[in-house]
Image 1 (cartoon, rainbow, N blue to C red):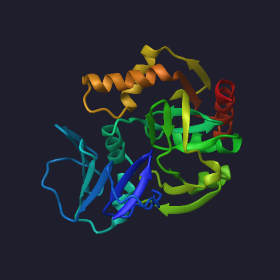
Image 2: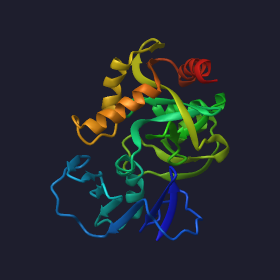
Image 3: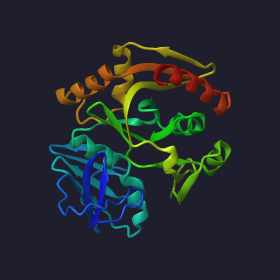
Length: 288
């Protein structure tokens, strides 16, 4: 049994997850979240990449055929006939943990975030829009790396889930980012690997202040938007259980009330440094 401490909760796991930090706590109880592994297939009709909601549980099938069952009683149950645990470790730190933390009362949004001092700025958007690239590019501009893929909110704080980021070796070299470790990703369509950012460049927990929704354009601009307009963007990136469930809508409302929102039009023809410098200046004006 492996023990972890993430987002101020205890986690017990049947398998070693190298992307999470082992806990040295002597407390033998694991009262928060359990991860169980079953080395067998699961007879459940679900397509690759699909998410299915049933009362009290969420099911997700990754591209390797592994099925994750996330329950509202604090369990992630893994069904796999693949003996290569690396695939499971690669998948569990995304959608499965996102829904597991949602069941634990956290508000989870698909995005990246950075901090400046004790305050944080979030970058939301669809996959492939450059969230992680922008977050990494801000490290050499005085910011700290906070989250990648999962922005996790609770009690007016945003939590670091882990210090790993999916990106390319070329980008790490181009941005001159110091890393502790690199792990190869399997069957990644964008030819990325996982890189562990050094502790000196990371934050653990901060106060979220602002959020940006990325839109690709041919000219850079940043515009403040009303909460009503921000809701439409947040809705598509929020880890929710039911489109009409009142508790999900309330959780999204809580985020809307706590942050100021902006549309960031990223110049798709400009180099990353130019886009990053533009975003950095705006962030520092607001949270610096």
